[in-house]
Image 1 (cartoon, helix red, strand yellow):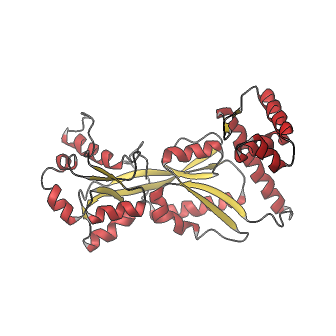
Image 2: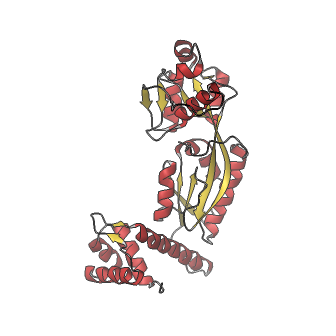
Image 3: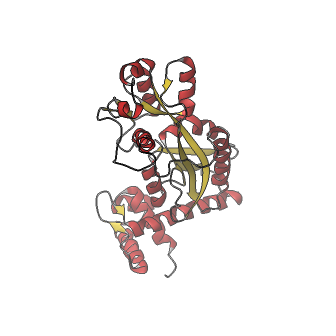
Length: 318
């Protein structure tokens, strides 16, 4: 493919960011006709449709590749200007990062306090589930993400952070009322706390009990009970379990103090759930991004379990 003219690439990014051709024209201080001509020329050059002409405008799959390139190009230009002493007045470095809710509520924010602020770095966090964090990377909306996917997004590198341990728990009163017999059977009937409709951790735990009961055979699909209370914040999820609204799988860092105080009981002390976490980031020589990646990896080594067998591949963290 021929080289991509930078003015056309930047124009495509402006259209995606602004949502319309007219708004992009105003942002670029050119006419809407000029914006339209640049986008058409770029589509002819690549041989691909890059934009869906909706309201707001959205990038096609091919367009996302160009948009990601445009964002990376802008980041490289900014870093180069900073190294050359030409960055006065441009403000601090901005790093958009996607992270799952439980990491955000436990170990990730303390990690960010270790990021040096000379020069200053602004962290823009996107709280998303695992499936959407990879979409944000593909679209170029974020430069890095904490994810449960070991498969790198195109143009990104991936490294293992560790295992996030979850503990199946309930309040003592809830356990005394609902969990008095065989655990798997009781959990298939008892009220359950679920983060959202993508949260599979409770069902995964019940399935693991069913496999054990079947001698390791997969058997029929089973899961937690039909009464499900949806609580879409990490702290609210924990509090709902403590209150006795249902049972749930709680991050180890949140559960252990409550178990020690007697506010929660472990349903299966020897059966934690370990979910692998990975760090994906753009393959970009950015000093600020490299610094944050080192800080996050060091904090994860302290807060998460060491990688090993037994992790739940394919189960996303909340």
